[in-house]
Image (cartoon, rainbow, N blue to C red):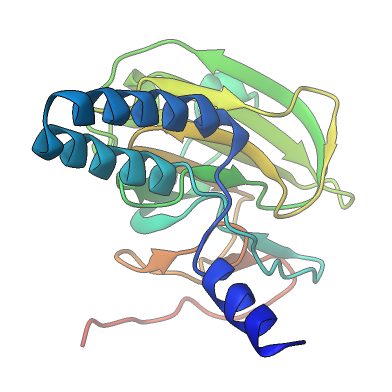
Length: 237
């Protein structure tokens, strides 16, 4: 590769693709910025900053997805805000038994594309209208607007993923439908703007992440169904 080609490649490496769902928002922000510059350079600059943020919010980076059988991956980027054993929402059809729930809170600065935690068939997909409470609250799992799906793996395990709207988020976008097969790490949805993703794991699953840990959707392993590792102890240093 020539020196110029190497420089261009390095520069392009700093730019992350914008998901198609964000194109219209970027276009609107660009138009507003141009109009703003017609009235005031300061106003135009402020609106241009919004253009940059909107493009940043809808970024859709590639991920290096672990492929070993039994691994369950984080469904979204963000901070692990909650790990608890709880009965899953009734609409999932998973029964009353306690399941491990790993919740990941997505701030307005995180990537908002959600990815499948496992490979399998989507055997259930439900949209539930609701409130727009702070997504970090416990009751957001039951009270907030949400979109849920259940994936059945080749081994017959059922993993549920719930996209939960938040205080700012007002729109949950889905890319998949019931009956469709999906691969681990594949994109299945998007939430605008700030939200939470819950993953319900099979009974007896041991988490491999801790509350407060940063998770990367499609990369971070949150559990391993084929491992016998004991619960990890963690500390903040």
